[in-house]
Image (cartoon, rainbow, N blue to C red; front, side, top):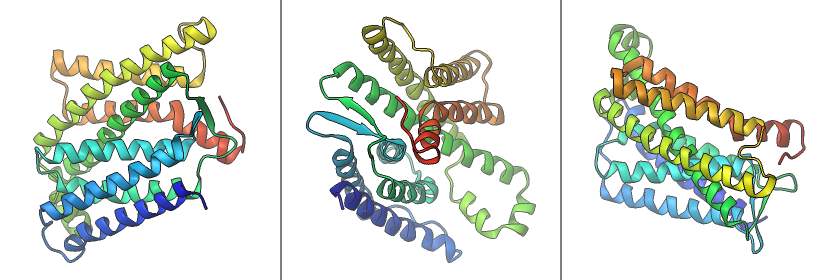
Length: 284
């Protein structure tokens, strides 16, 4: 058993234990306890363990190796780092109710489906491609965290408009939603994530164009990844323009965020999953 499988398994276990600790008061019908310094240190230690697992799986002496599950692992790892930094400024403990179980599941997927012979191999001397890959993964991570937050905000918005129905039919759901940060705070953080994610995604497109120009003499390759990435970039660009000019917010902004995220995930993770797992063959 390779080191990255062991490390991802240990990271999954650590995330699971953290999940149980934060879910306990919710399941016991109590208020969510604030994340203290000890738990913050535990989260940071888990992120370090997860980072080592990503390093072992991704980096080889003469190349980088990446597949769909490792891409998800890197995405949630970077996203959790962003959350940890943001949580030092705002109280966002309620978001951990979803982020920690998601991180547990993704680390398990990375352990069960490690990079293999069908994975994407990137020569280490290709510095432009490595910069493009780093920018892409960071953009995906930010937008993925924004999408998770958009899901929560959508549920919270419905809960606030129909509190009686939620309280009668879903006591657990009510406690989860009541533990979330206020909608106004979440909206500010959401658009901050989208602005940064859109900027990094723009950098990813520019560096991708440089790589394509140097390798194929084309500014942009005509393939599914480019198509879905540009569509996602356009969706987020229109959303941010609408926010600046017309004050778009609420449900409209949430829908645009989820559509943009879905397109971005189709650009890489979804297609690699289909080809590597379902069809059992790699793609470039």
